[in-house]
Length: 252
Image (cartoon, rainbow, N blue to C red):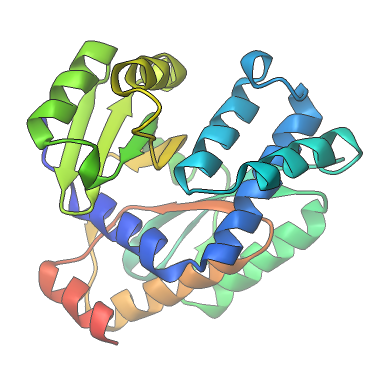
């Protein structure tokens, strides 16, 4: 099984270090509300809601906040939201996939297009980038969940395809259709005392593109701007930064 990729390392460092907790809770609450509105308030009968609640718990969101988000979906919140995927290119030819949940498609499209055009990128057609990514399930555990060997053994037994571990934690990858089955098996294996930080479908690049210097600076700005948009749920890219670039960007 592969070692944890630089791409994933950059992505998760960015997600862990740059996002304020309040903004994270807001995004998690929004997903719970939308899932509740679209599929009902029962997590056992609503896979999207079950995953949204698992992710909220993994980030230590209070139970009252979770319940309010579920109730909001049943009371009219989350109405008319649609899921949209945008694809484009950033500095250095890096491919970028943006997933949004919005109640105003025109607003979302304008904001995403503007983010690309003002930060060295350009929006492409649907399919122009995603063909070079694989949509897979990803389950993220903190380092404290267990040793590399313990996590790998548990993941294999649960039916996972791959495991990548580093100082930031463990990432377990599954076939798209097996995500919930593997996640449930891991919950049964570890018990309630060990919760996954996140459980979701992601776009994982088949290959990465090295980026450095000014192109890396501009790319990080573009990714930050996209990630800060209210309608945007997830941002994925296929950049690869060297350890020296990671250190430089961390200091800047």
